[in-house]
Image 1: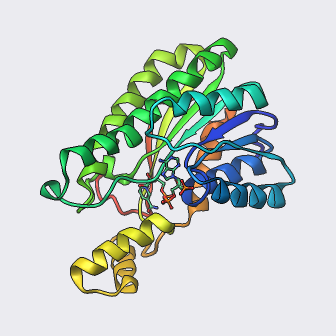
Image 2 (image 1 turned 180 degrees about the horizontal axis):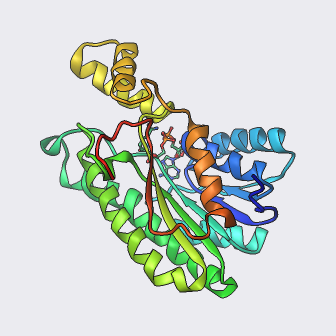
Image 3 (image 1 turned 90 degrees about the vertical axis):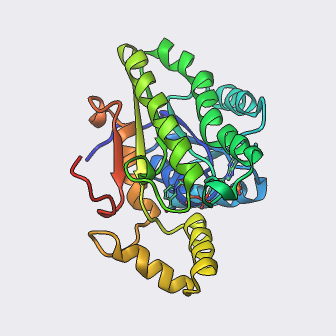
Length: 263
Ligand SMILES: NC(=O)c1ccc[n+]([C@@H]2O[C@H](COP(=O)([O-])OP(=O)(O)OC[C@H]3O[C@@H](n4cnc5c(N)ncnc54)[C@H](OP(=O)(O)O)[C@@H]3O)[C@@H](O)[C@H]2O)c1
């Protein structure tokens, strides 16, 4: 399927590894000019080299720690200065700490809210005016299957991602008339450093080995396996394209059938 994305510009945050990197790679494979952000320049340089090596396209690297004040404006300004616009925003970052309600101090909640909720909102504030002017834009938030079915021992994620989903739906209505679509993609258990970390937390609590924890996760899905980052990234590339021009305000699971509800 021709996605017709050549020469669009995408900013993908949290993109030196895992789901963000897979999204940036999938977009670059479609000819999108990609800017990638994460905290560590060293990780970003490695990711950029991989994307360039696999696609032959140059990648702009924009280091910066999301969740810290003013950084989003600096990141967006760098991309606008170097690449001229942001047509596609894939808003993503590291996940909030694991734990149950009484495990977390109020400061932990506030810090997580800065990262998971406010940085995504600030990214939208930085890129939507340009999209409005062009009459075309794509905003895709990487959230979690937790928005359909809360995940055990992830109360902060369960709470903040529901808030972000409300924000995404609201701005899809507000900016639909300007040709901007806004969707969220909701990964289930997908093999990345984050999932490995969560499996280690579960292993320490349960006494199971990390491999046993992975097996139990897989057993909860209809497909009986964990997902690969590329399987989420394919959906992101499709949502970014004109093929998905009539999809907005949706929250789409990519979870191998982990979520057991009907809708
Ligand atoms: N994998 C799953 O099964 C799964 C399931 C549901 C939801 N999710 C959520 O999807 C998101 C991505 O997951 P993932 O599995 O790809 O996570 P990951 O493997 O931990 O990768 C996170 C990426 O974000 C970057 N990052 C972390 N904190 C950042 C910050 N403050 N500012 C900018 N970049 C930051 C990291 O690079 P640096 O270290 O260089 O900053 C890395 O590139 C997370 O929010 C996660 O909770 C994942």
